[in-house]
Image (tube, rainbow over all chains, first blue to last red; front, top):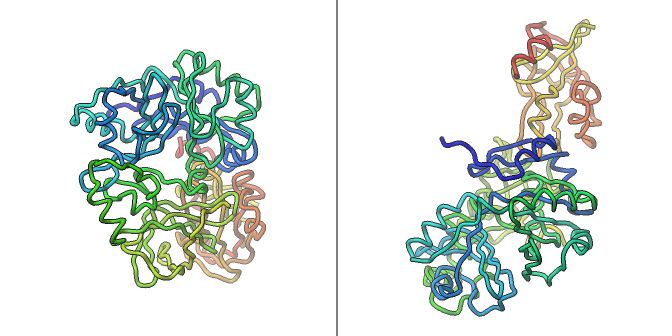
Amino acid sequence: MSESKTTSLYEFHLSKNAKIIDFAGWSMPFSYDGTLKEHHYVRESAGYFDVSHMGRLRLNYSQIEEINYLICSDLKNISNTKALYSIFISEDGTAIDDVIFWKFEDDLILICNASNTNKIKTHLDIHSINYEDLTMNTDLVAVQGKNAIDIVTNIMSVPDKFSTSKEGKYVYARTGYTGEDGLEVMLDSNDTLGFISELEAKGVKPCGLGSRDTLRLEASLPLYGFELTDDISPIEAGLKWTVTNKDDYLGKEVIDHQIESKEHKHLKRFKLNAKQIARTGTICISDGVEGIVTSGNISPILGYPIGFVLFKSNPADDLVEFDIRGNLIEGNLLYKRFLS
Amino acid sequence: MSETKYLETHEWYIVDGDNVTVGISDYAQGELGDIVFVTLPEVGQEFSKGDAIVEVEATKTVAEAYAPMNCVITEVNSTLETEPELINNDPVGEGWMVKAEIKEMDDSGMSYQQYESFIS
């Protein structure tokens, strides 16, 4: 096995006594003060995350048609100041990766999951799309939280939600993965520590991948490798809203058929009235339909276990029984987001 | 009261006459991350050495604590039902899990020094 990659902040994380884990071939901070504390920093105030492990590729507008053909969303026709969440679709209609595009007047940047950077690069290569890989000489820092925007206003001008901006050393968008408002900021690795000291001086706390996961789950956001895989389509994952591409695109036939027929797997949210967490891989049954938990954890805000479960077809009932280490635990499917 | 002993499965226990108190080690709580739910046994429940007596759900993973010897539960730390974080904050003190009457003494656990070299 090859050695784990590190971000430019690795030594800094160690100096903060971060618990380090291997994630997608990167040595990343799992937590600093503890996952629950960090979760509450973001829900109640603000936290920052080193997400420099995520792939960052610069694309060219001259190939916008070719890029648009590979995703289910309409990247081509939205304004060049927008950030767009979209999904690269395979010929079979399944997800190759879920990504963010940052559109600028003069620049187009693709941010992909760390576990999929190589897969996306190969995919772009196959379709003769040129890119410049910025991953190793830039960093990506997410500033997220209830007070995040108030705080970063003192550092840079804040664009509208899902919009992008460039200012001095900062290239950024008002996007995130926690359910809170905030910015995701790309900058030259030489400038990152300075930016982080500014954030810390304003009371923003470091947060690791542990709280990033509990926050995204509680915010009902999917994680590639769990809710979305190369065996799950965006329709199956409940992400039909991302399908806005009006042109022909790879996998369109399958996606259109799934939308029309509703004959596909169904991802649902669930909660348990128990002290057991139904974790990834837990088998369950609802109305005779078998399902498997894709992600599960406690919701620190709600205080009970929540998660996503993928059913073979759409169950008619909202009662569901989970087999947690041999015990049958009852739960409920939810038709709304976990947090209102 | 005898010294605190440790098991390879990361429990600690203290023998006091015919009784034993059991919890999990500081190392174990650190590895589990934030503990959010604890399922305790019933008073009067009987366990053999190696049986799972407590189930601990943490944000990172789930773990069980095992009986260090054959015993019958006499008391559970019910505070853990509402404050499971006591195990993170004070694993070998306030975060104790159960007290039990010893049915068959087995004091073969490691000393703290032995346990420290075992985990390092």
